[in-house]
Length: 425
Ligand SMILES: *Cc1c(COP(=O)(O)O)cnc(C)c1O
Image 1 (cartoon, rainbow, N blue to C red):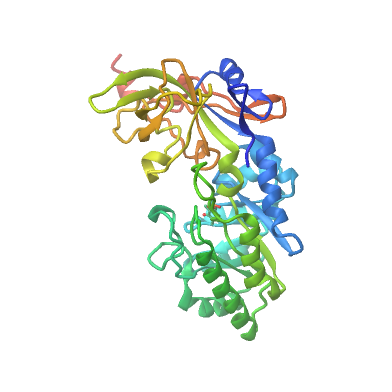
Image 2: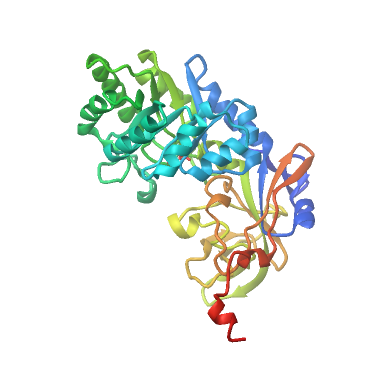
């Protein structure tokens, strides 16, 4: 459930009308609902009630400081995948011990930063990383709290580009090699072996892959304990899917996911970590855009909007679907048309909908793409010298700009003409 609803025919975020925000900040812009973020976090946390858990919101899904602060105030930690995200989470006020550092290619600088900041857990993804971390920790006389991210070789049946738990994927240490690596790690003086981590992919809409992976993890924990290794945490990653189509059969609920967790790992006596991203943030955000032109084509109409693939790349990158919400609600019986909604970027892939059946749109109409709160603003670029679009957060009847629109000149502020060019002047 989200708080983007029509009131008297006009799309609102909570109690604020979308046209009011558009008038104040211009288009395009991302709009997040604080009540929806709060609700999604609570539903997820409530589904795990009674278990010893730590919910670490995946900052890469939506890293805006205000979003992280809001979730942090509700008790969330953060899952981060770069030194930048680590600094961001700390800047948002997330306590270091509630931060998990994941990622397949952490540099020496990033590992040193993680140790120095005192993060709760570093998820190690290779023997080379283990050795590097041990060296860094030993030099400063620290022990690094780690889990290995293991690759359970489970197909999460999601989009190929967001599947991470198959043995052909780059992530985690090989399942067969894990027991040996735990023995190696356990003998290193700079390493404190804490746990086992998995993350099998994103937008997972079937519980079976989770159940298979978590069952394998439980078995591994038992085997490691038999080998004398003290495993105290299991980290089950993120990945729970969300409904991108409002008319679709809903993906499994957090409650059903919680049942899988209870069935598989709750009797281990471990603290259970979670790294949800999409399920918290996706339906808490929309991207609002304005129609620039309507262009009749031979077979269908092109509606050209002022947002583009650089603002929301998911349709171009993953063939992702985002429901289109006209900001002015169409009359119930109004005729429909076959429409492609496209952006102005010079790429054919810059297309938000293909052959969508929608009520006709006109110049200057506002529309919103739903379910854009995760992997939206964070993946944006300035391709075509288009400044990043603002992010707005609504809370009840008020809203705040939580990232302002840069000036276009800011886009080349770090660029420099070499002396040998300016000398000629
Ligand atoms: C991306 C990612 C997540 C979050 O995945 P969602 O599908 O957004 O829940 C969690 N953990 C790791 C390691 C990730 O890379």
